[in-house]
Image (cartoon, rainbow, N blue to C red; front, side, top):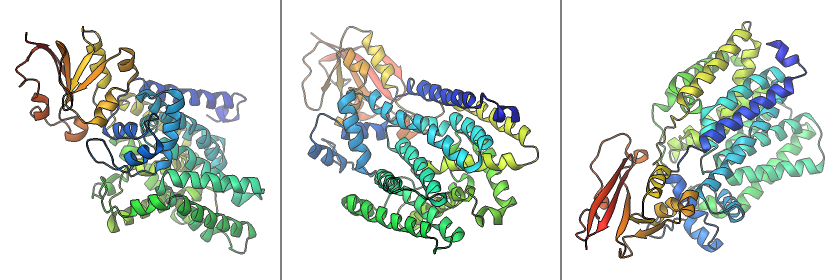
Amino acid sequence: MNKIFNSNKYNLYVFIIFLVSIVFKLYYFLNLDSWFDEWNMIYTVDPNISNKLTWERFFGDRGDGFLPEYYPPLNAFLLKYFLKFTGYFTENARFYSLIFGTLSFIPFYILANKISGKKCAFISSVIFALNLFIIWQSNEIRPHSFVLFFSLLSLIFFIEIIEKKKNLLFYSSYVILSVLLLSSWPFALTIYFGKTIYIFINYKLKNLKILNLFILYFLILILYISINQEYLIYHLKRDEHYTNLEISFFYSFHFRSFFGSIPMGGIMLLLFGIFLIKDLKKNFYSNARLNVLIYVIFSTYILIICYSILRAGVISPKYVIFILPLIIIWISHKITLIKFNKELIVLIILTNILNTYFYFFENPIDRPPIREVINHISQNDTNLLVMNENQVFINAFSNYKIFKKKNFKIINIKENKIDENLVWFVCLSNPRFAVGNKILPIENKCKIMDNNQDFQEVDELKIEDFYVKKYLKIK
């Protein structure tokens, strides 16, 4: 094992791991559909509308409904202008997230190498590349991969600042980076809380370099509040979220989600707990770089629990995705210090490989197979679809590349009369992301064509989450 770390080919091995991480993320990208949260995001970031209308959609206007977005607007506008140049397609919106999810490997490796050296960086890079939660979230049309990328950069800058004297350009870059991170995800404030505790415990405040850092923190906070004042007022009025604090959270502390399965999450949580208790005092009262990670991890857990108890539930692993790479690095470092580390390293890598193989497509969110529906209909003799759905879903359905390539058209039966003789009726019925695996009757909205005396059914596609039938007008 040591031959790998001391080999001239070490950088080649790391590059291969990076390529493996890209392949896994791309493979998942090519086999993924969108779901409710992403449909709303896609509707909000339409590059063909004015910024004024984008703001209206961000604050809840859904055309025929109302549902506000609660993530910060920065990422929405960045994605909007990305789609303006690349094309307004669902796949391109997902590719935007994939870029940041894929590039996160680079600051992750740099951070792991700074924290502990080549051995830890190699082990943690393998785990990071195979991590299912990172793969899944790198393909989610949400800000999570963007936040992951910039949170890792933020920690690298922090370590550089506390250890070496930097010039004004470096400090300015750290301020801009921090404001960008916080403006994309306010939960990232827990990172700065953890950094602050680390400084108080490990450094004397008379240290001029540390005083400069606190001045930077003050400047970052002022800039963040000034830029995001409207959003903060809007967000702090909210007294409920979708992810309440449940007793089950304390069984796994998100490790089940973070590592893609119950077995893998259990193994990593067990290792984390053993290593934490084994050197409890050293883990918290040492100025080792590694302890920055522990302070950020525990600050994040404590703050989200407190916020969930006192204000509104924010217990979702996606909200705190930035602590996952820190957990991976911390565990990997601890593994390198034990007596039988070679055997444990091999075991951990093998179990991660098996976990990725068996649970690759076991994302807890079941997505309606939109592309499969479009592919099936495209093989038939009509390009006309009838729907009885809201504007958000119709917009999302019609923004797949294959939909536009096949020149499909959608008639919203709520607004228009059907004049064509042959049509496909597509209706979303009891999607699994909403009802789980319950077997429920077809939703009433999907019976509208069956009750239409002018049409008769001539074909049907039986598929999950949808009620899909072909109808012929009765002459």
